[in-house]
Length: 362
Image 1 (tube, rainbow, N blue to C red):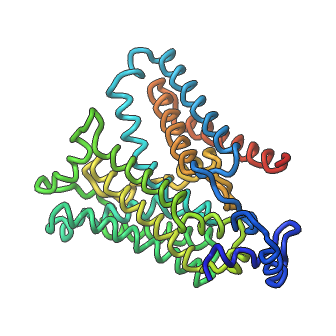
Image 2 (cartoon, rainbow, N blue to C red):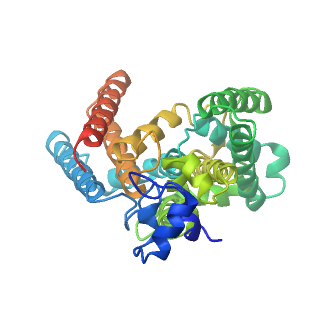
Image 3 (tube, one colour):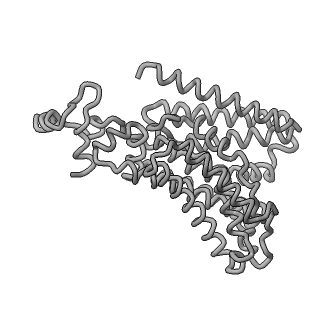
């Protein structure tokens, strides 16, 4: 029986509550897509449910425009330059790729605190002398495999070990950061000149933009298609919205959870390649507090921390908002502590708006 066909097993909000009732409702000429009988609703094209997602997107776009105006007014000679704008996009590419994976995890009802440490571990492993001796292709493949493998470990601990995602990924954060420090002996590992193809991803430009920006765009586009145009995406929304109902609907919740953390780990591996290209190094200090930035971007983008609803476009806009804020603070010579305070205030406001929206009429 297909996922759609068994969707009527679980009644919600006065619908059929047993298999017999569901069968009667179907036999009785019940029409409409199976999404109406499932405990989740089919996302629209931008990953949100209903018009609220589009409204939030417009709000984030307005925030970007407002921040750009602030930059033009406060730093007219420095902000609106091609070099600064390219720098903003390059900076957003690393955290943006991580945010794509984080969006999948949070929509699926989980959380991943280890993304920054996994990126650091992948960068260190890929820049060891042994790995570099095989060339840039093997270095990139190593980073991807390390990130994906660590993500699979997270997924196994959560889905089959039944650990709480917060605890499992917190343990991975500590272990991965420690392993990265041990492998590098707390030293920064430089990429050899013969492997400058990695650095070329940051220095080579296409249409005026470095290649790392196009990598970010490709990951975001692939993530959007996977989330909004495939069965995998529909199952992600289902598991995040109601795991038990998703199980009754025929979805393997454990396997789906495992896959979500693997996707997050894969994104960490790709982000490690980008950070290596931008800094020409592998270091255990890479990705410090990236997990907080990624979670913050996902939250202000409209994804619920409880899972089941979210939009990848909103998450990407959230990344751009935070990156632009960071850029404005740097240009205006403000302290890092002020940046953190501003980001914290934005997160609190975003969560309060989410709670208010959930309490409002549907």
